[in-house]
Amino acid sequence: MNKLKVEISAELASAAGLDEGNLSEETARLLALELYREDKVSPGRAAELCQTAVEEFMEYAAQHNVSLHYGADELEEDRRTLQRLNQ
Image (cartoon, rainbow, N blue to C red; front, side):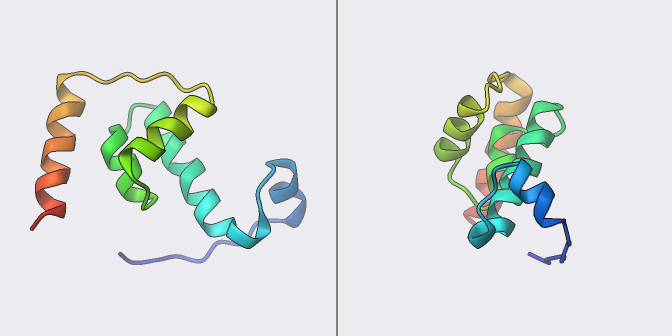
C-alpha cells in the first residue's frame, strides 16, 4: 500500500485527542471512520484502509457513535474485499 505524508498542527492533534506517538494510525482510523460514516465504504473496506480488523473497526465506530448501516451491498463489498485479501 502506497503511503503519503501529511502535516497537521500539534494544536489540531491535541484538540482531536490524538496520541502523537500513534498519530498516523489514529488519523487513518478517523479518516476511514468518516468514509464509512458518509457511506463511501463498507465496514470491511474501512477496516482494510486503516489496517484494522473488521471487529475492531466496528467497535471503534460504536465508540464514536457511528451506527452500523450494513446491508446487502456492504456484504457483497466485504465478500469481494475478503477474496482480494485471501489471494
